[in-house]
Image (cartoon, rainbow, N blue to C red):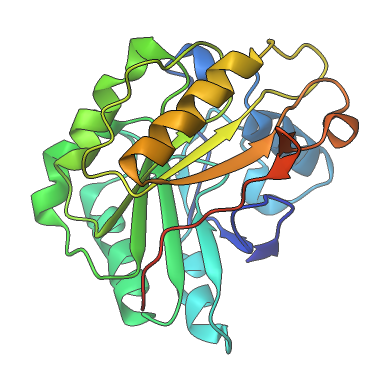
Length: 238
């Protein structure tokens, strides 16, 4: 468990670490940068580097120790649906989340095809929010795969947003997060792309969360859109 500065969650929980890049949104992966730092610091969990996908049995017991309800981002340093993560381990992660129904677990993947493929082999409790990354129009098929899964709450993470998403199919989608890329060489995000997504969400009655403008100095750029901060979340009860 780790406290996090990610605006749309409270904690991160990483029963899997390591990943491989599969689309343009992965180009400047923050988890890769963080893994290198943690490896250099001598943190055992990251000793094999970022490209080595590792499962961590000892992490499965962590959620049972949380005394208060939490909102938890699962695998901020990996992708639970990576091909190198065995189905049996994914099922065990789902069992942990099912056992801890007082918490909200937010799972995000770029491997939406595998998500759809194994969804019927998973038990979907009410407290799992399932999302897919959609950085541009080239990967919008991930939304169709997401709709096929059994999660009660389904969301899109359009971060880093590197292209317009002018015709999002939001049927069955409960939440959309938008954010610009940050770092040393961030790709620009056109404000019109953000405004268009916000309007689509408003028209479809979908919660909209604007995370950041990004850029080389993301704190200075801030996260206001049209003079307003958008922190909308899905309206669900545990």
